[in-house]
Length: 103
Image (tube, rainbow, N blue to C red; front, side, top):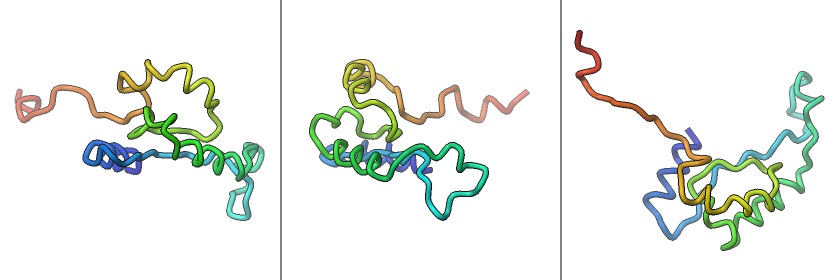
């Protein structure tokens, strides 16, 4: 749902940068025990990622899913590939219509 909302906000508001930002797995008091071994991320990481996403440098990622533990350098290296296509976006693809339900 958040991914689709992000896509709608980005599509309907070209002057607004919208991202679906995953904070990573951060150790907090709310974290269930079964996930604690995966809690390797720090709160500062998502804060830094959010700060970077607010810059013009990250504008090509608007409307997309971003994980805070992805490398900014790697994302920038793939800027043309990501920004020029549907990478990191959610989509339902296929032929839809009433005719698909007729025998």
